[in-house]
Image 1 (cartoon, helix red, strand yellow):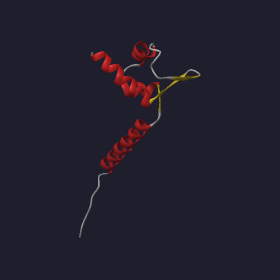
Image 2 (cartoon, rainbow, N blue to C red):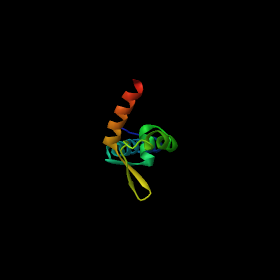
Image 3 (cartoon, rainbow, N blue to C red):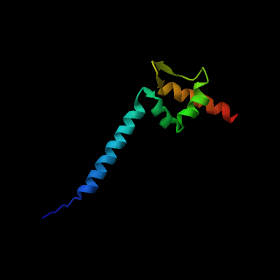
Image 4 (tube, one colour):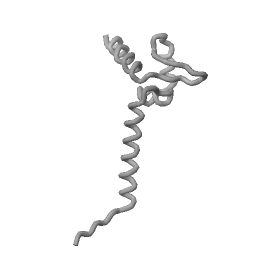
Length: 88
């Protein structure tokens, strides 16, 4: 006879970790990011993003009302170019 014992707390922790992992993946695949997601994506604070990037007219952004939106692919291209220029 085979007996399996499960610890409810461990199962719950594993389940929640997997859900979080999948939600993070979905967020990374989203086409547009809001300002909070952009901060997380770039690992920078909003004031730093405003100072360094939003002051640049070439930084890809869309403003709808008072809300900023950012194309993930365009931001990625911009950051690739920006980091290359900063390293030179």
